[in-house]
Image 1: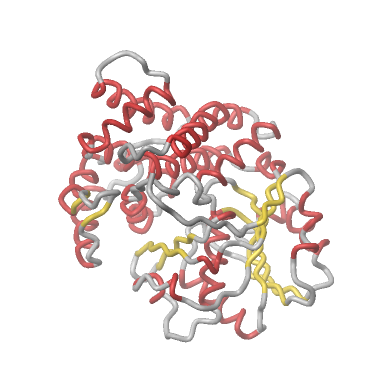
Image 2: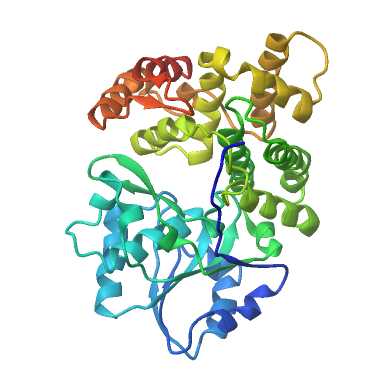
Length: 388
């Protein structure tokens, strides 16, 4: 295990009715930007519950944040935030709304020009100021409620880029499992796959003599395998919903990544599929992940075999046979949740995709991805073509 430093400042308020603690966790006299998406929170009652708690504050609403939050939309929020002198952001929604809030939080005080430069130049960690954030999670998936990461799309250039900063960890996040009951099943399936893939990105590398991280990661994956079908069959099962929600949070709050190598090439490639074709984030991970493991098999086979044994209980066969079956079990799991794993099942315009992504990565100088820098541009092209 490698040396590391770890701090997570987010306060979690988990459980039914915790929204009633909202006012206790927002600074007095704050001017709040109330950020949310397409209005589902008004149908499921979350909007009314939140407003009842913060009615004494000055609240400026900003709605219409997309499932893949767009820079063009968020800059309107930035302008509004500057005009109204916002000093607290309340993000109410899923990972997209939380990601949007993080960009807004950095962009409002940004004085260096176009805030998009924060993503292009990867300077988020160097910023000195951000508006504080609180969150009410309505869609478990991304873990954004307990980390400092964000992913933003720009429609004009068809790009999707990420950033991370310790300044944008939510000060608190409210997690009420009851919200899961109102979610469409495709969003639940996407959430399970998103969290599962997050764990794989931090686990499926090479042995690092870190048994606690390995066992923790394997436990999250086994939990998602067990509860995924349950919560899809009965979203009102609050016990399964709670375990689902907490699995998603723990999958990407930084804990299982400490002291171990991590990959993230699947995400970097997957973001391009969303930017190009509007495919749901989790679906892009289901498309790319298994084929990345096939192409990088010789480098990942030890962890693949360990994964097969400990997560899928595959005990018979050679190391290579177990590793191969582990990949197939993963694909079968995604299919069992109703998610397709081939790019051609989402778009008819797939044939030029590998070339486009190869050109984009070259232009950004993303020439050596993965945990050891051996996912080259040529490997990326092979992975994408295999995913057609």
